[in-house]
Length: 132
Image (cartoon, rainbow, N blue to C red; front, top):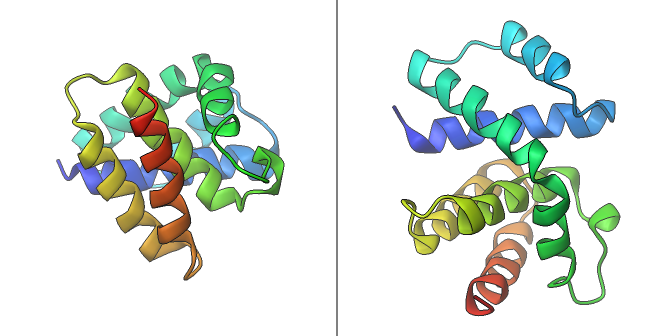
């Protein structure tokens, strides 16, 4: 499995949910039916997204308290999902080094977000990481 592709799929699933303002498992299932992921990537998305949704308030609170002059609502939707996945990994995935989560988040931002997003995401995640 490409963990990067799985993270991209997870970001896309969260993005779809955010766009539709529907963070239900039914919406996740619909997303998975309409997109084709390899077995391991599909397994990762189906395992991680429900867990992120269950812990979304804590993840978002962690992000929000480290945004200087920003709110979650003001963030670009893509950036918001990238941050959610990385912070979820910081908080709940001890087997993933935080540096890996930061690097992957920055790489995904380079592919899917604005030119300024990688630096912005790196700064926020660095601040959160140093606060642990």
